Amino acid sequence: METKRISDKMEKLLNTQMTREAYQAQVYLSYASWAEVNSFAGISTFLYGHMNEEREHMFKILKYINDRGGNAKIEAIDAAPANPKDIGDCLKKILQHEMDNSKEIDKIVNLAHEEKDWATFNFAQWFVQEQIEEETLINSIIDKYNLASNAIKGNTNLYEMDRDLANASQEAEIPREEGF
Ligand code: FEO
Image (cartoon, rainbow, N blue to C red; front, side, top):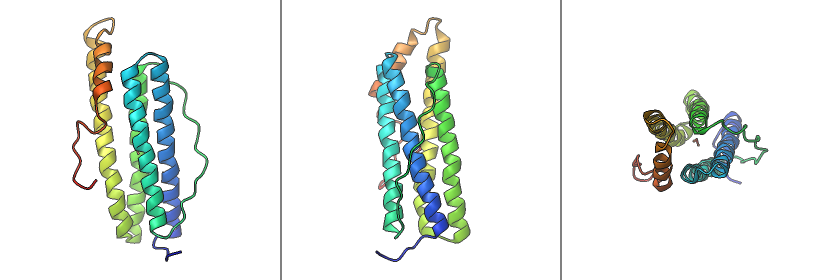
């Protein structure tokens, strides 16, 4: 195997984050299934789509570890959390998961900086940007939810919001840079 070009400490941290991204996918998967069972087809489509994004994040880290001469370790993924109470609770919890995940990404950035591991520092920037985009996206959905659920008693606007999300691409509102 090629020479290892990440520290043992970085390899461990990246492996932890890889499993964490798999956990993120578990969260989206479980919430998507919950939304589907509760007849929110649009929201569940959106969440299933996002589950795939999280799996891509997991795979991106796996490839990076191996490409740098490390060893990606496939480990147990924690069970998904309990179902949310309602859509508002679901969105609030998703945002919290994303904000928590951003803090975990920051740990990689901090260690890379500390070790002067500029390759990993550069790699981690993609995730920093991704987290900004994800937090913004979820916040914008929460804004829509608040409008839909507060404007008219009886939540009739929730139907429109659900339909809106069914058609929303994961990346529609936030163009990415070329190459990302
Ligand atoms: Fe891969 Fe939504 O964090």
